[in-house]
Length: 398
Image (cartoon, rainbow, N blue to C red):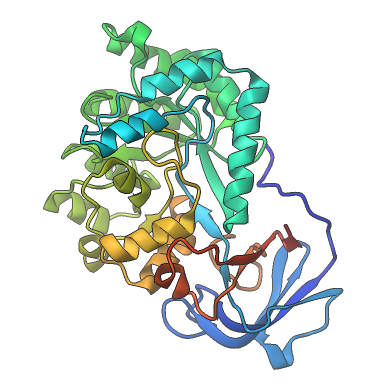
């Protein structure tokens, strides 16, 4: 399995200097929860951060980049996407904007198109969306399967995803495919047996859509247990369309994240607060489906670790822009700009159980985003504006 890859020419060590405001996400390095340093510099060498500190004391390097007073922050960590698909569901979006509710049923439309697509067609879509996300500052991205729903189709989806990211997730339990509509338990048995065995070599994670109309609690627990037995780590689509057992199940199996978390009871919030499971919020989905937004303020005030991700998919959140989702989180989910930036970087890293990304300190991966702005505040203050000036991934300008 390959790690996140970008085109670029290695340049030895690189110093980025004259940074007006540097978000490190390390409170030992700077101010507040974001560890902000003013008039800063950062040195990358061999793909890692080698030095962080005041620009006036920056050591020499093989190459230099003058930030000209711009703000810099860690690359975004998008911990929830569905990039392996074919087809278009723009018509479905238009229908929803006319008042039709979102039910998740359109997933089957994408399944049919994805099964009919060639490997090269799927590879082109994944590559295009990965490049699009990178241009917008996303340096680490998770990619799920889930639009194949047969053994060979799920395996090829994961194989193609693994060409561009180390963070691949087996989501054979996305929905019950049409051919098993009257035999859902048989499909669950397939997922828990032959499918997970074949998929595991290409995946790091196992996921399940624990939701009304998808998989119930017992079915979801069986899928997660089978994935864990195959060496995969669990995460859960939970409580998106209504109240349910998804969040509590995620905590029970010690999942890295419970994703969506739109409809939460007090017991769900308490369970998350007492666990290491991250609540990953996906405001792009609520924007695209005209659904209620999760109450991030409630989660944060309870002490829950919160991440933000795009949920990029062709049906309910066709965006690769973490900046857009960050702005939605501030405007409609009651997060402060500081909390939203942390959730889109360090929070995403927590959701992927990564300690090398989402922050900028000596030893971390040298993933740096320079903004055409003096402060990270502009990510929410100027929504929809292309503020990403430069992206450095693994110490290389992309």
